[in-house]
Image (cartoon, rainbow, N blue to C red; front, side, top):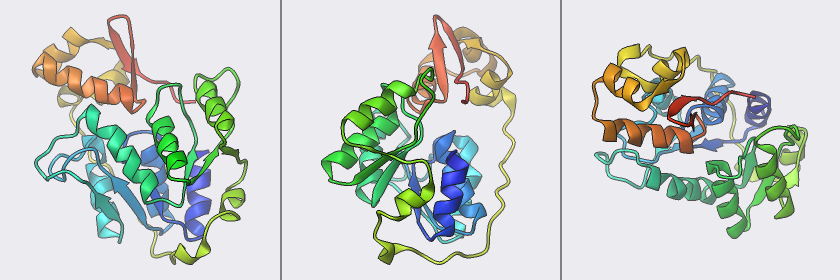
Length: 235
């Protein structure tokens, strides 16, 4: 669904704004570039520390193809969990409208939608299956005035078309391969791990690992069950 909406909105000249996170953010940015559109990535840290590192090539492609990386932090500031709500506020501030594709009860998407409502921006949501963990978040947004949409055309009919931009040459993104020994995401993609297993395999300080895992949880990439961390299942 994220790819469908991103592709059609891009083809109609919309600039896609998101946070460069893994998952839906990545799909939105990459699909926009693949369609020849322009996209803006708002970062939770400085330009010297692109987070997550899996999206370093994507960040480069955004800039090289007329898009924008935006950050309120100095280049040497590392991404941190406390920075993400402010990043989400900036995403809504520079956007005409916010589209929420998935939203758990506690999620960055809900935070962005909350800021959008405060800024009198339109908030659109896509319906989720009732048994989905994200259904409750979507329901809460609907109760707070969000508009449910089923097709991208419903969004296009409610925005200011003066800000639409022409398409350019589509871009194919080639992501770098990261060694499994130095990447939490790659470790968890193999199987769930305890914090001790991750520390042992990556040879990093527990505090650093916990910080990265916390950011992955906030971004909806990983979840913790007991003392086990695993990647969140895609729906």
